[in-house]
Image (cartoon, rainbow, N blue to C red; front, side):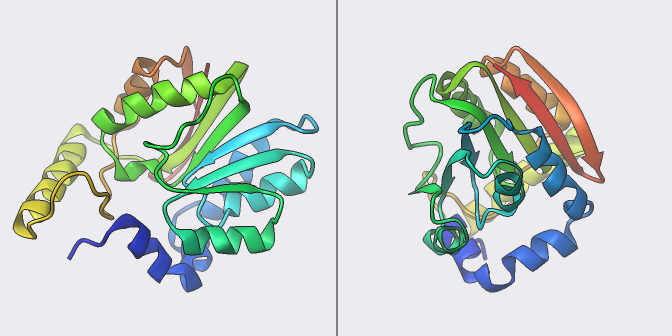
Length: 214
């Protein structure tokens, strides 16, 4: 049975960090690599989409303790754990699709293993909003799980639709099911969202790090 996204992650809080670090290929490399790409300037303002308990933020704040970080997540329990570790981080509980992000506000944004739950159609408007929230010269670091083929991408998306129909689940709610894009399709979505250049910075199995410049 599909679970609502926030309920899925809240129920797995106790083992979440261990799972992320031990069950995802390359995680002990890609979390620090992602953190290393974010600005080191004192007081840099960073937005984290789907921050969870903040594994990438643990590493980034060790590199730049004076950074000002805003984290968004659907799970209040995850955010409570992040707040316990980093009381100075500003936290918003809700959907990054719905919450206002402001304009020319952040030096950089980051998202790790979160956006693979959503479709290209959902992402493009988010990327437009995200781009507007970045200052001139700002950028977005996306580390996420991607499909290797168009066929895999189509299969995952059709399976989610089938499961929702079978379970009588309405649209308008987020359910936990992976619908990753291919890297080329993710790049197209970022460019359609207004980002000027998108580069692959690293790869660990099915996880890639992309850097999208405003």
